[in-house]
Structures are given as C-alpha cells and as structure tokens.
Image (cartoon, rainbow, N blue to C red; front, side):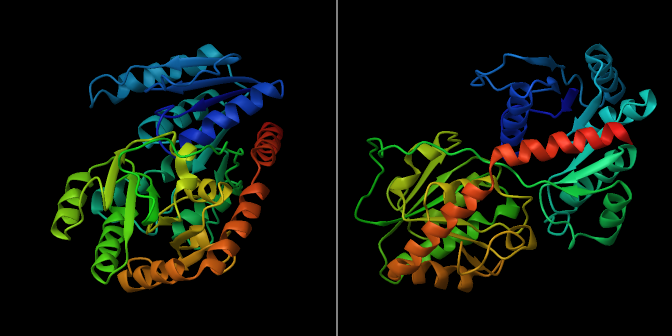
Length: 364
C-alpha cells in the first residue's frame, strides 16, 4: 500500500512520536510511505524509504495557498490512502482534497474535547469535526465513549475505531553527572508541555506545601510552553529554590536516559488523548501518579498500575504524593505492574492494527 500521512510537524509531543514509529514500521513491512508536513525534526535519522513533502506555511491567512501546496503534494505521491493527524490547519485541507479526488482518508482523533480550558482551545478542538466528516474513517487513541454526544455521533458514523499508542522499550542508563541532581531528596519528574490543561501549577503547589510540612522533595520539569514564566514565579513565591528544589530543564527528548534517577513520575493533566509519557515512564519502572480522567482510567488500573487522583484537586494530589513518599511497597507494586502494562502496549501490535485499518479502508 501507498500511505500518505499529513501532520504539521515531525517534532513535538506524543502524536509526532507515534507518527514516526508508525511510518518506520510501515516501511519495514514493505509499504510505501510519505509525509506532508510543515516543520522538520533535525534529529530524525531514519528517513530511508519515506518520501518527505515539507510545505511552507506561508502567510497566516493564506489558507488557499496552503491548500494548494498540500494538494500538490498529495497528487505527487499518488497515495492509496491518506491518514490525517493534526492540527486542523493541515488536516482540513488534506481531507478536503481527498474527498474531491476520491482518495480514502482516515482522520485521527488524538485529544479529548471534554476538558478544554479556554474558549479559544474549545473552538480549535471542535474544528476536528470537519476532517472527520470529510474522511471515510476515524481512528482514536483513547476510548471516546465519554466524549460529547456530537463527536461520538460523527466518529460512529465514520466507522470509528480505537488503536492505542504503541511503545518501544527504552534503554536505561546511569544518571549523568548534573549539578542539579540531589540524591538525598525524594525526586519527582514531570514531562510534557507547560500549558494550562496539564495543571503543572497544581504539582508545583503540592511540592511547595509538602516541603513546607517537612518533606525533602525535588521536582524536575522537562518541557516548555506558555505557562513557564508563571510557573517560575509560582515556585519563587513558594520559596522553592530554582536549580535545587525545582529544576526547569526545558524540552528534553532524552529524558528517558536519566528517568530512573527519580522516585516518582507525576502527570496532573485535566485533558489528554493517550499520554505517551505516562506509559513510557511506566516502561522505565517508575511508579506513577496520574489523574482519573477517562482517557487514562480507561486503560490504567487505579491502585495496581498507577495511583489516579481527582483532576484539579490539590489535596488529593498532595496526599497521594505523601503516601508514596512513605509507602515503599506500593511504589514497588506500581513499578512492577506499570512495566507489565507498558510491555503489553507494543508498537508492533499498534502497527498491525493500523495496517488492518488501511486495508479495510481500501475495501469500503
């Protein structure tokens, strides 16, 4: 099969990671693969067998020009099927051209619409309905049973299916020398964007209050985003010493290489799709705390594979962190069971399910 993917970037978060793993897996299985995108990943080395169509974004309001550049790339590749990812600035033109040309298209639903924190984000998120309507099929990486009625209706109408993210086993290495590393403290790790729906501010607040009550904690944050300035100010107000009690490492795609230095991984999000970083942390043997939102609780068992706290609940988060500081046995249990869960979510299974999806799409 000739499968063409459409996404804005090859670098970024979980979706981009899954996209690159899927493309490589398809090529290794004998399929022809292409990608239409705006922003490259300079660190991507395995490019053999993939046709890359990088299109310029152009002026912000030049949507017709962007449509023409995307459609030209689609026509040049001549795909059997197209898989649109995100965001809608790329997926809507791609799905529209596929509908016009009669090319089978599958549209991805990779984030929940239940927890958008601002009007702008809600408006952006609901635009995903457009490529879903234009496509022949929709694929989700999480259980969409609790999504808004209209989204569920559209997904079901487009033969919606669920394919969980797949993961590769990450190498574990010794902690590199770092002047911020405090071996005597109980060490917490957060990895992800610094945006409102991730609620990193709640985690910073919890760490500040727990330190105030006498616990020796260190929080390390790997990620960047619009909330970074506010988070640094919050840490200062809580008297968390930057570079000591709290460390901002910025975007660190290599975080896996030093993750085992930490005692606990925390993901306090109120909105996710299927969070790669949570499963990757489990695969590295870290005990984890996450929120009980349906996108996580639908595949993670509370008290067995992770401790799930109420979203937006500082007391719940703080008490759960304190529990794991003191409860070594539960940390060991979560570590072992989390590893088993991560191992069951193999990238090979995910790729096989996508191949089946594409084949069914071509038979429609």
